Length: 113
Length: 114
Image 1 (cartoon, one colour):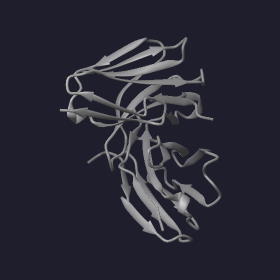
Image 2: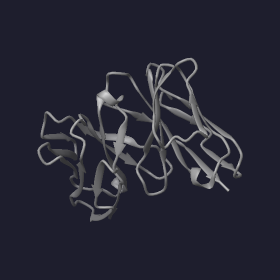
Image 3: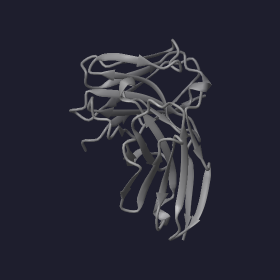
Image 4: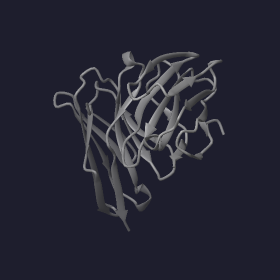
């Protein structure tokens, strides 16, 4: 059972544009929602994360919006740059399940110069 | 470098052979996770340890897979009688128990089974 659904599968934006990636989850016990960035041949690296007690978190050009009632969260990348071209994964974790993460399917972002 | 390290980075083996991967977590992290990632997919949880105790195993972890963390530091993941379907990136991550803010991933071991 896929517990975290991510869309779109791929995304192409122009330099300076806004990239938006969406995720939806099913398990209401999830209490931690990170976004990871992965470059080819590398392990995932944490980008930004949020807990369900806040609706938005911003770090630099990256913002997470969280809607607890809809069980959805999204990543916004402002002023997208070619260096942001990578695969992005949303994930969800639950402390009572040992904090193991359930990942979405990934979004391949391409930022054209 | 104080990050999570994994060895080898790449492994090519023939079907039916056994392989073993190693993960060295960040030194003060007592919780260690193994994930598997196939091409075009997100990582999938396999198992995790708190100190030397293996606390959970995914149904993805067949009997051919075994993981150990004998002294609560490094961990090994062994796959016996490899199959072509085992070809994937095997990722290790570590965290300090009780701190869910950041799960640090290693660079992974890419396994190719011919």
